[in-house]
Image (cartoon, rainbow, N blue to C red; front, side):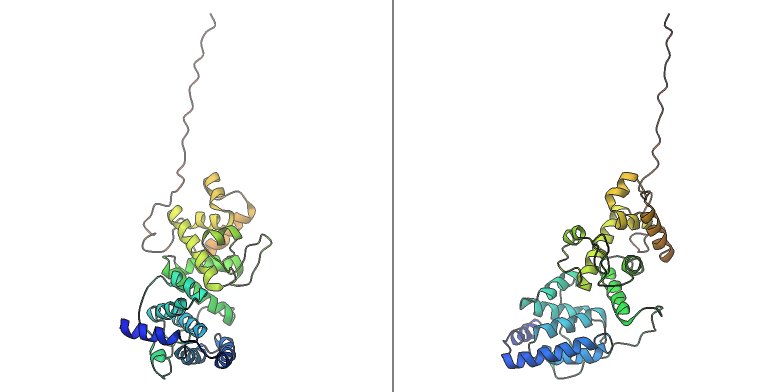
Length: 291
C-alpha cells in the first residue's frame, strides 16, 4: 500500500504544462461553484484533475471526503490527499492535516483509476428548514471538526449559531470575525491564519471551546460566559460576570443547549462546581476594660 501511495505521489508532483494548467483552473473554478448544489459532480471533476496532478483538485477532493459532501465520508482518503497536496506546498492542505488529526495512506478509487467516485449515502434532511445551503454546509463542517476534537457537535453548533448565525463572513463591531467570531488574539493563540477560511476558523473556535471545557470541568454556563467575555473575567468574578451582554449570551446558549454539563462521555461525570462557595470566618473581637 505504501508503494502504491508513493507512486501516485510521484505522479502527482509532475509539473503540469502551462496551457493545460490554465484549462484545469477554469474547470476547477466551475466545479467550485457546484460544491453546495451538486458536490458529487464537483467531486467527479476533482477526481479527474487529481489524477492529472492538479494540487488544488487534490485539496478540494480531500475536503469533500473529509466532510462526506457528495461522496462517502472517508477521513483516511482525505488525509492521504491532504498529504499529497501538502508535499507540493499547498498551505491549506497542511492546515487541514492538523485539523483532521489522522495519518493514512489510502487513496480513493477515483484517483487511482478512471472511475467515478461513489455517491454519499442518502441522509434524512437536517432539522434546519430556515438554513441556507451554505449554512447547512458550514454546520456540517462544524459538526465534523467538533467531533474530531472531543467537543459535542451540538454545543459547537450552538456557539456558532449564537455568535454569527453560521455566517462565515460575519464581522462584529469588536473585530470578532468568521463563523466562530474569533478576535485577533484568539485567532493568533490557536494558530488561525485566515479567519474567513471556514475550516480554519472552526478549528480555532473548537480548540478554544475544548480548552475552556477542560478549564471549567465541562460547566457549560462558565464556558459560554468565557467564550463571550474571556476566561479572565469569569475567574475574576468566580462565575458569570455581571455584564448584561454576557448574561444574555449565556441564556441564549443554554436555551439552545439545555445541559448544565457538556454532553460527552469524558465530561458528563465531572464535578462542575468550579468555584465552590468560600466561607469566611469572622474574628471575634475581645474588648478589654480600660481599668
